[in-house]
Each structure stands twice: as structure tokens, then as C-alpha cells.
Length: 150
Image (cartoon, rainbow, N blue to C red; front, side):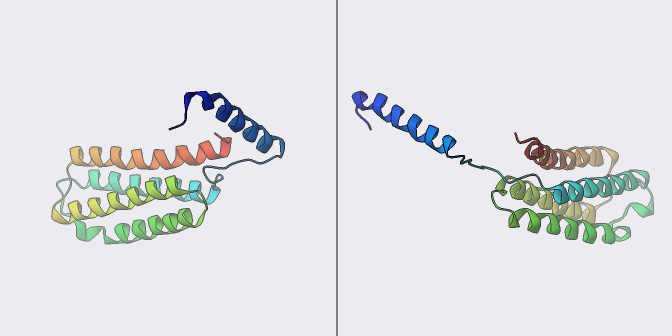
């Protein structure tokens, strides 16, 4: 701990250091810059996922609701999420987007496991849609904030 008498001096030194950095034109980036590729890939994956969920809703109660009618979707979604995750991880200071993408990947794994067990009801699909859209929204909000410089 610092002695109370030293606190104003430490504060003055920190302020001086901060002003020196600002005067020198230095800037500190705590997050990466906006990435248009990630933005577009996440938006496309959201659309693909919504199309899948709409198809599952339409198939409720029909033999077409079973998992074995949809393996291509799960393979494609895993590839898409993997590509987004690898890109996010390759960008410096992009840990938040990387974490959100990993959460999205886990949601696809959970959806696939649930679908393998049984057909999904409209209520289950509504809950899943909300969870996926929360992930998509978080990633897109972060990318858009980066674009604005927030």
C-alpha cells in the first residue's frame, strides 16, 4: 500500500505519463479493429440457422423432423463456425469475439445432440432461436462497435 502522503504525487505522475503518451500520438487498442469478413460470415450463418429452425418448425410432427434429414446443415454450420473462430483467433486483441464464437460453437453442438435424441417442438425451437440470436447479436454488436470506434 502507498502512504497517503504519496498519493497526490503518484496521481500527478500518472497524469503526466498519460499526457506524454497522448502528446506523442500513442494510442492503446484494447480490442481489435472492425472485421467486415467476420460481420458478413456471422450474418450469413444467422440466416442459415434461421432457415434451419423454420424448416424444423414446419416439419414438427412429420417424419421429416428427424435428425437424419438434416446432417448437411450441422456439418455446414460446424465448418462455418470453425472458419469464423479461426479468423477471430488470428486477429490480435480479438479475445471477446473469439469467446463469443466458441459459445456459438457449443450451441450448435447442443442443438445437434438434442436433435439426435428427438424431433424438436415449436417451444423448444423458440428457446433455441432465442439462444442463437443472443450469440449472433453479441458478436455483431461487438463488430459494429469496433467499426464505430466505441
